[in-house]
Length: 463
Image 1 (cartoon, rainbow, N blue to C red):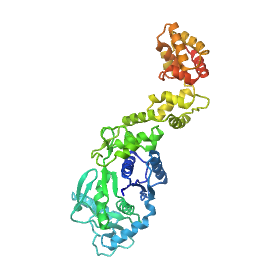
Image 2: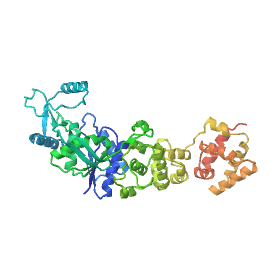
Image 3: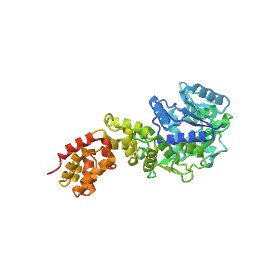
Image 4: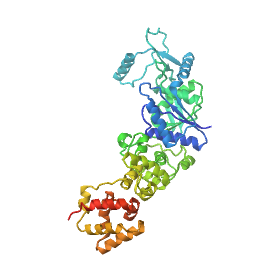
């Protein structure tokens, strides 16, 4: 059975790159009827926090990337790593190294001075000297000194690395905590991971890990290294490009299905399909169509996708999602028009839940126009027509068609063009010159509120 995993370090939030790696691993397992495992690599004791663990779990939940097993935590498995490290030492495949930090730095400085690549020189590899007193050793893996490491990467194709390029890496620190390259191998081995799908910043780790697998007599998983994500300017993705927590996108008003769709298209494609459902992703996903080249993060494309999904979303769901945004803006929907009706009127114009809430706000509280808008649209010419409209709206049947008829009648009787009445009317009632159809907007706001706002604003007209 196919078994994939996502193994983040809890040293920060779940960012775009990590979320895409999780998505690819999840989709590969789902497409093949396999299992997706979540593992938290929390051996960086100084930087790992419970807050970061929760941020990762929250991000996974929001995206709907459900795991079949886990989350597992490396620090709960420390004895397992120690036991296997000792086994490798006893078999002559690993050894204790007593070098101090100062010795290692001197070693590297001397190598740099000679124009060599800084690396551990193996001085304790086959040493027979007596260990120095009071020094806590690390355990280093005896990397093969000859030959090559080869594997056929599921994304990048054949990769060959000479063992001479690799030094004897530390697998257990002096405090008895495993290093990344050792812990990840033991975890993937114990959890029967068949496919390791991760970012291509791990390519250099893979030959080291393959040698550890071989030393343990284990079957290798398949490796697939997905391309990195760049900003739209071609530079490495950073916060200024949008490389923030995926939960920030939730807080900014994005739908999870839009984020899933967009993340999937960052380095993977299925024909020319730009928009597809989670179910289609699972049906189509494979590693053969993951690009070898870096993907570029395009916030405008993400916003466009979000807009498409918002237009298709069920109205009750959108209304429920918009409520917290309105509340954060100090708007209560109590006593105002039904929020689902407002959502249906505005949804075609919004690209995010945040935008939708901003557009809906004037239905639930007065939004006073800026001085600039008033000066532009509150003209002496429009005032008599708006006073006439205010009077006529008091008696008209409060439905869109009747409101539209009254507006047209006032425009005709005052010999105005429609914008000369509609624009100041919008500003008076909504505080904005940009709204959906004015008759539909007035209908939803309600007669009493419309008349009250008009009266207050008419007093501000010149002349």
